[in-house]
Image (cartoon, rainbow over all chains, first blue to last red; front, top):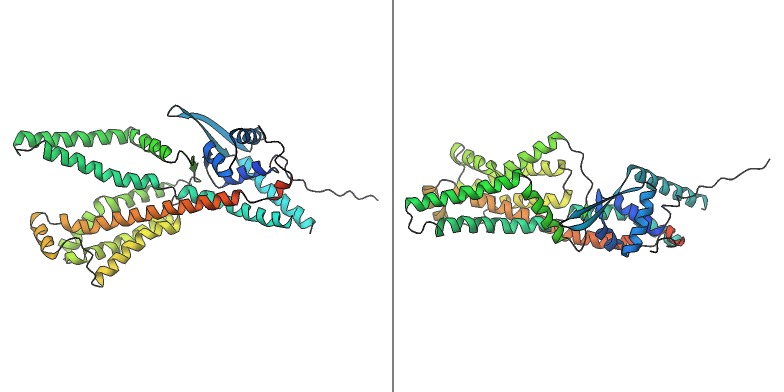
Length: 101
Length: 264
């Protein structure tokens, strides 16, 4: 009888260094804006925009655009789904680590 | 691989923790506000009383009272309509414009917390010290020199409870405030002269206005230690930001996949 081995695979959206760091940072906060994420993670404008768009498409973060004193302001929040997926991601990573010894 | 695993664990634990600590300890806007506010208030009051009534005649006194009442009414209006808080928010954003905005996790709002905060504000900055001063001085006959320790015996436990129960505040920097006020009381009881006034000044103050000068000894340390706590919190936020940036740049297992799809 052939035994099929199934292996956990981490969430591809999260298993990317910049996106993982964005989610981890947002998990400690209620909300952070574009400038804070860009400065803290030392990213460029475009790089941060691309990654946050992907996270938003996956439903892991919410993006709110507004104007503060006529200056565009973009705020990011971790969604409930994002929080759950991040926790699951680390569980998967832990299982993979245990599996690999 | 093993090195990435260790640093990933470190990042996993540290990034959310230091992000929250940083956000909770951003207090520079409050420190600057608390420095500027008394100066502005003093200048307005001094200006209206000294400049508007040089002769001290009744019309000038009425004008001065009307001016001060107008200022007070304007302030109340700004607070009630939210203009004051919006201006404060704009000031905060301007102050932290280079770092960006980071909001700490919002506490679960309970009605009791709001009531407790209101009571704390009243107890610490409003009628509390006045009421306590009256009770200690005139009802219990506590000598003026021991007024600060007597008030500290009531305010310190109250502050500790409020800080420990208050989900908005970081625990240890917040406790610095009651700790310093308690230490002030202990030193006063031990005979260390910490009063801003001499015994004769206090006595003459008593003749003019029973509790005016004595209250400075109660209020000023409360304000100064509060400012000290906020300054320590601001310094701690600098350290938290440094730790956050260090943790955010540690290599992780996900780095092995590479930053292949994020280039704009």
